[in-house]
Image 1 (spheres, helix red, strand yellow):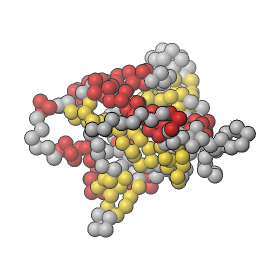
Image 2: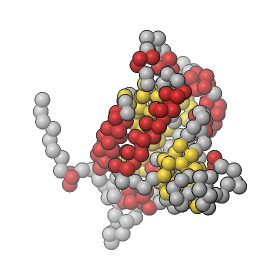
Image 3: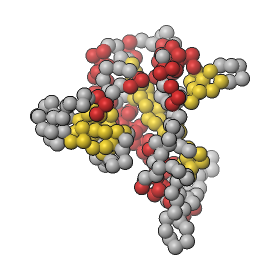
Image 4: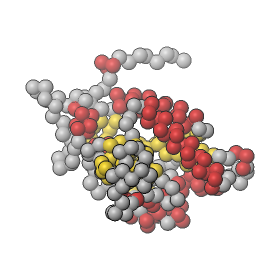
Length: 274
């Protein structure tokens, strides 16, 4: 086979948004809230808006994402993760069976095909992957734990898309779904995967905090978020100055102001979930 031709960086399609005078001028779509990272990505020719909350990912961004996904793959496969690809079109029947078809409300993109069958554009894939594994009658307990993950586009009908890729309607997400023999085994998997996320974010040089979080529409008994403290974040976090405790305020009652571990006064900051 012919060898791929090396493409010089100077040949990359990267339309800079720099008007005359050298002053950066890309500010996003009219009426849309912007942030510094969004403006820099627009000005640097990394993304291009097509409609509210939807962006073209230009060649330099795709190159960077491919490198990032390689690091993700290494960390996920180190804990036994197997990569797959689940469909973006998800059956309404599956979502009704789980109860999330109605629970998700207007955030869910819904459509009907020519045969009058309902579908949604998947924001997550719990229903699909559970149906996939349940359909395998030959699956043995010896094959567990089963840890399946993907890095694919997801969809959410945001009422007010803003801040570029931070709050968009179509976005990439890495999600993992695990199947275990018992609740105890599932807890072990949970801890191992959390450790893998910590390793990943540390490799990326990010200052992050792991916080207690609500399970939301997905359900479950335990949930944590990995948050990046940032002024433009939309999540409110309460943190112990000594690092003994961290939680999303939505999980706490309004009266809790001190760390349950050391008694120090909790400080509030904003964060971006990753």
